[in-house]
Image (cartoon, rainbow, N blue to C red; front, side, top):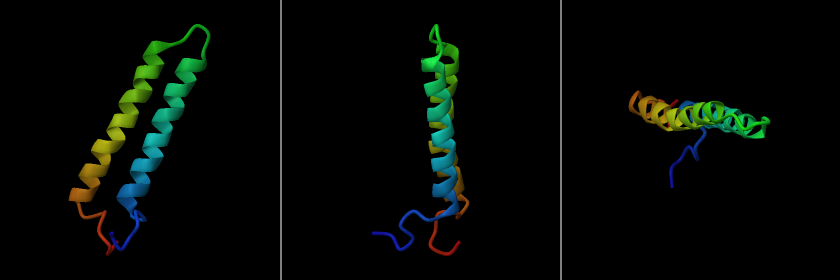
Amino acid sequence: MSDNHGNTPAAWTAVVVGLVGFVVGGVGLMLSPISYPIFWVGVAITLAAGVLFAIMAKMGLHGSTH
């Protein structure tokens, strides 16, 4: 188990961006009629959160010494 328990800038940034992606996708699904372009933008934002996390972790923002 890591010492930081996910309390790093990389983890928090990825979670916030992922949450924004889920909200955007959810809004796209709640519109009447369903807006698939907005939904897929939300999916793309959510996937970008994982990429952003990997980049920030490589930059050293996921270590225990932040």
